[in-house]
Image 1 (cartoon, protein in one colour):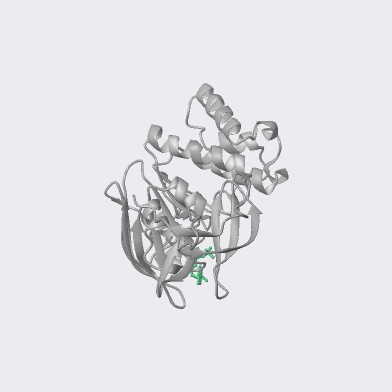
Image 2 (cartoon, helix red, strand yellow):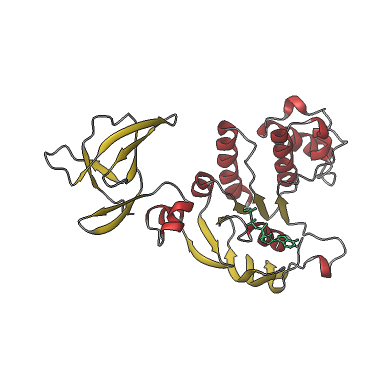
Length: 310
Ligand SMILES: Nc1ncnc2c1ncn2[C@@H]1O[C@H](COP(=O)(O)OP(=O)(O)OP(=O)(O)O)[C@@H](O)[C@H]1O
């Protein structure tokens, strides 16, 4: 449905070196990559808000062109929410949403606006001018405005940075539901691995201007191909066991109570993370490892590694 074909982007130096992928209906694609990898630039190109040096973007077989070929840049069926928010700051919260759906019958406008205000927990601020809203409220309003347009493709660039855990979770559930009900596809860029892992059907890992890997969240988390890729998606332990270098996630272990555990450990401390603890241990020769558990593991003397398979 959306196809991104061989995108090259050069500023002072090459940023994107031939990016191709497609996004199906109802699909959520996550984009991961280090700072400067070109994630934001790629979203802008897909939205028709920036020109690629080379390459094309098609939505339902129609070309999405950039600002050099279009007087008013952008595409009605592709909405980008980024950190600029792009609000009408001297209009109220409610007007900001309604302004996007003036083509709908009045009663539908009212109903849809109320629904979006409630979803984004903005009802209390509906008559406030947008410039008086907090950063988090402005971010929620920007997302509400994009959703009001019922785009075919929603592009989200770090969409949840100002939101608390509760609202973040609600929004993630809503977006997952929305893509199913409204046939919407989403591309999300985030530095937060939990957001990418929980929302995405597939994740693209951008590195050195190319797609290093396109795989499912499970594959990226448990079946990583390099240590740097593994680190992008969460904590990773690295040890030498019987002369071999091994890597495992903080949850890939079994407690070994035997006299001579396979991997002997010295407890160091536990960090309370809310619903679980991260337990830190010394595993010889300045090696530190972390084990995730619902309780403190201060009596644990050793473990065996138990890798998770799909
Ligand atoms: N308008 C521009 N002119 C020149 N260079 C630019 C421009 N926009 C971006 N760049 C450069 O292109 C590279 C990619 O930038 P981009 O913002 O796309 O990366 P990113 O992966 O989104 O980074 P971050 O995670 O830090 O937001 C960076 O080196 C950036 O400095």
